[in-house]
Amino acid sequence: MKVKELLVVSGKGGTGKTSIVGSFAVLAKDKVLADCDVDAADLHLLLKPHIRQTNEFYGSKKPVIDYRKCNGCGICAESCRFEAIDKINASSDRKVKIDHITCEGCGVCFWACPKDAITLKDHLSGHWFISDTSFGPLVHARLTPGEENSGKLVTQVRREAQLIAKGQGLSYIITDGPPGIGCPVIASISGIDLALIITEPTVAGIHDFKRLLELIRHFKVKTLVCINKYDLDEKKSKEMEHYCRSEGIDLVGKIPFDEEVVKALAKGMPPVAPTGHIFEHSRHNEGKASKAIRELWTKVLTYLE
Image (cartoon, rainbow, N blue to C red; front, top):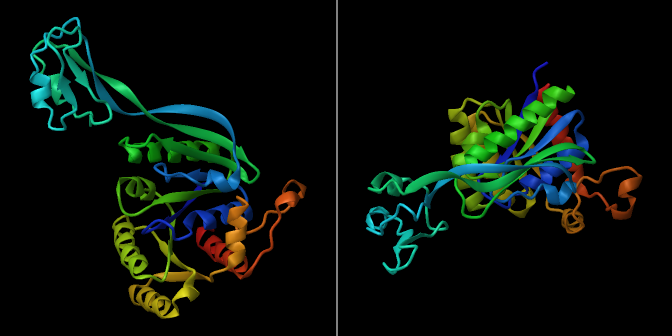
């Protein structure tokens, strides 16, 4: 049986994407959860995972100088367009120094060095985790601030989620995707079965929604749309509804603004309240938004089946 993969994305941050994925985690059965927003992962804040396995992620290579070979000529510093290499006092044992924060790992210094004193070595760029939650297994990651290749880390998270789903005979992968249209989003989209765009009725929300929709269409992926906090600007919401109809995109949900969601998130809980004795100490009231999210999941599930 093929594992179906649902990707929940947004054109910009702050639309409520992770809150909705957290609620889907409560409602869905037979699934693996994946957080592909590796630059700023926060699904774990709602799901309270117990980390079972921690793995290192080497996303790039950085130069290392062998000072036994280095003669301090400074050609490497002259070649570096990022100004990441500084010449030091010629009498020092270390005649040049590399700033690994500024360094982009391009490798020009490696090729420029006439003494072969520079080698490129794998650089630790972050970590990825396999965790257990009350709602099922979770694969998530943390990219070190300032590091590159977040798309490569996204691919690693997705690969592990697939292996877990197939190994445990689970039906679905529900992925909290990164916002925007950059490299990590592209890495999240390729090969999925269904995309759900979470947007909001603002000028920026509409603009970024249209850009994201264009990107997903390039990959020929079936796309659904949900307008979160639609009642904050019903005129803009109507605009978005009209646009979806004109583009043949299924609008499957409209979630109202609800202060109960704010209270739930303040407790570190998904808006849809989990059941069971282990959650009794942190129960919260479900409002109109939770009802809308439950209806949204029911509709999304029909597209996955």
